[in-house]
Amino acid sequence: MSDTGIDAERRSFRRWALTPSLIVLFAVAVLPALYLVVTSLTPFQLVNPGSASDFSAPFRNYGLLPGDPRFVNSLWVQAKLSFWSVLFQVLLGMGLALLLHTQSRIVEFARTFFLIPMVLPPIVVAVIWKLIYTPDISPLYYAASLLNVTLPALTSSVQFALVSIIIADTWEWMPFTFLMVLAALQTIPEEYSEAALVDGANRLQIFWYVTLPFIVPILVISGMFRLIDSVKAFPLIFLLTGGGPGTVTEVTNYYAYLLAFDTNEIGYSSAVTVVMLLLVACISLGLVWMGRRREVMA
Image (cartoon, rainbow, N blue to C red):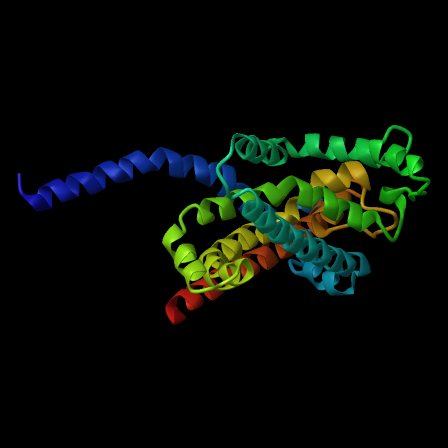
């Protein structure tokens, strides 16, 4: 059989091998997304099933969004949560990786220990922080009382509610950056640091001119993944603050949840979700474009 025939058989085999996976992906991901978009074009309410097929004013829901103060506020809350949580995750993950980049039995145990938060189910993480933030049973409040320090109720305080979510989210996902940076550090040839030491460079100079250029791409990638994933802090908000006090911690996906399940505004909730997904997609494409441009310039 000729090479052309073999290549044709391979392509045919790959298509048939991929077909079941593509069908499942289409059914699980594409169809719900299409249904979400279609629903966003209707005034669908659970108390009025016939409204699910009312397309008389398809863009009504989207027209209401700019004038909805709770929607605009939810975008601002999401932006603050994403910015600060990703910033702390990247910086603390990098610092921890630099600290534990050494060979030792104790260090190896510590590495494993610091990965635990990332592998826990999100609802378990939320329960852990619920216990930490509950004054009557919290070890944090108990330690503060021993030091004669009075802590406010963090999750019900206007000043600290969002901070408490940021802390919990950082604790959960900081190991992701730690793991990626640690893997990058282990690929840096030791000869570079040794040569810099011979030339008289100190530890800070070695980090700035040798180590940092190697790990910057990893920091960008981990930050990109965490920024995209930061919109999924729903379990923490649902269990710790319920979006409150007021709307201080009401991010966009939580607002969409309230619209759908508290007020039965399924159509409007779908429009909110579609806009949130489009914003996340735009941010993702922008970050990918910046990464490719950086590679071309390099």
